[in-house]
Length: 253
Length: 242
Image (cartoon, rainbow over all chains, first blue to last red; front, side, top):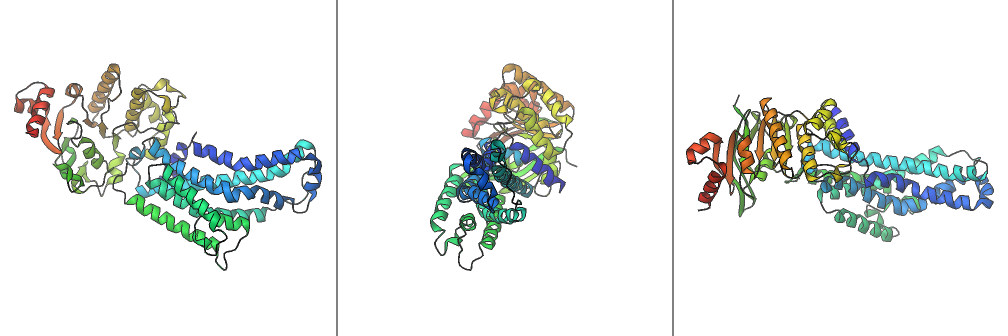
């Protein structure tokens, strides 16, 4: 356990000043920032808007509209690839594999860093959504929305989005661990993302592992198929395959 | 307990059926020695070192380090080894101290060790400078600092003086001697025969995947009737060509 924690700490330090850590902060706050600017700009109707009964739900939907269908999948593709590519770019796999830790520990530590980064992304994004309700009012002098902040609904919806994004993370992790060329995981990610956009209304669209965030946001159903279970299944499968390919690699560096 | 810190038995490797790289290498690195692993480009030096460190999957033969089988004691062995293989492995967006901190966490050695190796490799003035902006010589020093971080019993260094200026080479030579006096066994691979001659106690000469000679420098000189390493090296590799 201690070995895993030390390994995680080491991996976490590595991402300091990297593009992936910047991407998490910038990507999670970009849409809330745009909405804050847009709401501040339409000052006349802001007071009435804040009094609407479902103001938080409206803000939530406005923020997730672009996030769920575009930025989240693309952000995961980029951030996951960047974390693993850090070792290729700096030629550090050989150093890492000669440290006294098991290969499994290295695999788990890297995956954990990416998962924690995703949690960080969700937390920052939700703080951003809350700020879209608060900051414009503070700047213009309009009262805070009287509706109680729907914590539970936010939690439930975020959990589903998190689960739905895991197959993307797992597949991207496996590919970028295995392949040195940064363009390959990026190309696969982009290709599957486009395929998912096309396939989301197709009756068998749920077989494409990148569609689940679209299903969740658009409210599209895939018949009687439980898409969250499919997402969990794909995530487990991809992580298993990623581990298998990683552990059987003949040339470690 | 063997007198050898590192032993390989019939270590062979091939990229495919037609291109063997190593042919039954029996390396014997005595404990407490400075062993120079010499050979021309493509002789199989780096492949041997990568196999020893587990960076390449072993196909045939046996590797023992500190009398332990590699397969069964991988982590215990790596805990006592410091290494530098080919180019320096450094995170370019981090400072020298941050790079060392990344590895200090994994080795779980005292934090004070970071300043010790920074001092040993004369990187004290690098401050907040990111390593991406370091000269090749500075990167090489940092890579050596990383190899020394866990206070290893065996140092495996592939071309450690690459990119160092003459003053840096002399400093490193002194550092390696100092470490060796403290009991560290050093396995060095280099093309700089003149430099190696000043430092090593034992040598292994590899050519086309075959170990042509192994023993002390004196044994090498006596067997081949020449005093300088360069002449003997050329004679040996030429005769192997023929």
